Image 1 (cartoon, rainbow over the protein chains, first blue to last red):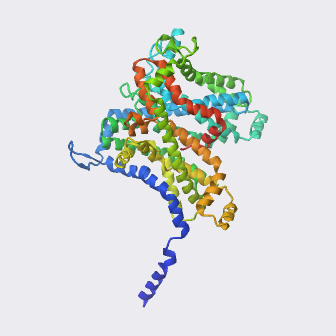
Image 2: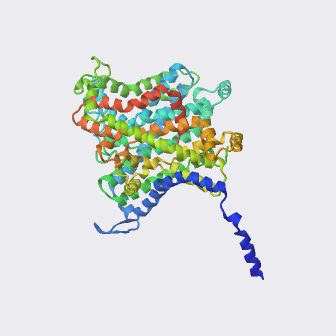
Image 3: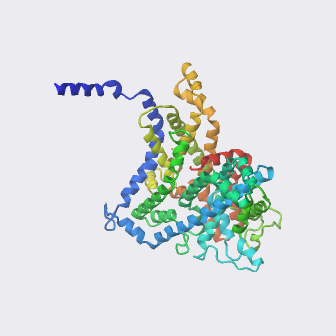
Amino acid sequence: MAQAVFTANEAREWSAPRWRPRRSTVLAFAMLAPSLLFLALFTYWPVVQVLWQSFHGQIRVGGPQAYVGFDNFLKLFADPAFRKALANNLVYALGTVIPSLVLALGFAMALARSSRVNALFRALFFLPVLIPLVAAASIFLFLFLPNVGLLDYHLAKLAISGPNWLGDPDIALWSIMALTIWKNAGYYMLFFLAGLQAVPADAYEAAILDGAGPWQRLRYVTLPYLKPTIGFVLVIGLLNVVTQVDHVFVLTKGGPSDSTNLLLFYVYQQAVENYDAGRAAAGTLVMLALLLVVTASSLRTLERSFGEKDA
Amino acid sequence: MSAATLSTGVSTGEISPKLGYAATLLIAALWMVPFIWMLVAAFNPESIGAGMASLVPSYIPTLANFHEAWASADFPRYGLNTLIITLGILAVQIVTITLAGYAFARLEFPGRTLCFYLFLLQLMLAPVVLIVPNLTTIAKLGLYDSLMGVMAPYFASAFGTFLMRQAFRAIPRELEDAALIDGASVFQRIGFIYLPLAKPSLVAFSIVSVTAHWNEFLWPLMVINSPDLRPLTVGLASFTRGAEGAQAWGVIAAGTLLVSAPLLIAFALFQRAFVNSFVSSGIK
């Protein structure tokens, strides 16, 4: 008896109208299908593949792929070139993101008021953003050229003999960083220009009435209002640090002696030049972990601006 | 040097702008040096020698370096490839992001939140980082060494989808309801009501997408093997390597100018649209 009631209830639960998907559901998934297909192929599947590959390898040369545990990671971290690339990437991150952020804020504050001259200068700072990183590198190749290059030629007029900008392992990474700052500061400036428009004018007036100096106005009025913008620019800057290595390819190929090698370039080398799939996969996984750490911090912002909960 | 001048620039920013302003203009001049050199060197009748470092033209400008660059690399072919890649990606993206954007903006369905996070994942894991596994996929699909192989990973865009979703949401539902009563199908409603009204967002997305893929280097470098299929960036890199060996700096400058010019000209023509779309881009 009880059994019969139970099955009757269950039957009602699973009866047709609930079971058959609604029309709008079918339509929605049909519309999402093209995107989901490409996301599956080129975002989810590669992650699965990298996870699998980083724990597998050939135990003997030419042998089949077998589970090797953390072997790839141990080899990866034992490789001085990888450790160098990781350390370089950290220096590169600090040495490019912070100066470009400070410069971008400075540019934006100086050029915030709209006038024809300011618009021109804003455009000038924005030009490097538009050219390919490879093109920028081609120009800087001559800039950094020893003796007859742009820098050395003009330094020589001041009786200064410059270092070997790209050839000296202690200097090369800093030269690359200079190029990155030049390329990106104008991009970040745009966000600060937009952010500054949100600072109410009476906030400054009140600060001036209270006798606040320029530093105090920056510290207590401008920066608090720009806090979300600074966070946002920081995330984009850190993403760029991991994902953009074209200039390394043109200028130094990671050399001399790996002094300018960065993670993505290292992974590229492992995959394309050394054919070491396991190590490339392990390296990719390290980068993915770094990206997740960076973007997870901005997840709240992304959810708010794009998410289901509308502000 | 710049740090010291800059700190005054920041501090005096809005109210007593003189010093900070002067510092900014000074840095702007410094910022222009690479471009000025590119122009001066590109139109130089010479291409080699000590005079190449000059920033002041002391010659009658010629197109000799452009001829040389044009002859030593197939720039028209590279340009065509880049054009096919950027426009091909954009065309497919507009279809995928419009459909997905509409689904997120106007349809109720189970698993919506899950789908949202699935899309969000693409924003968090930049495609560039996945070049190595994606190359395997492209090879398995038989797309290695083809322009389609360069384009395919970018056909879905979470950023574009979310941008379209925002734009569609801002459009009053009454417009769609009126069309519905007139018997318009869902695709007609999207084509005649949603897309025209979402044009600013579409333009913003298009500029960001085209700029990003016009300038892309590492991924096409890995996918493309035949010289005929190289896009501009890959062509320029190999051209630069060749000319660097010959120390032909004027030719390198001319080639670089050729590759950079299209976007620079587009920016000069549509400055406001470019700036607005880059501000809205943030995370691609």
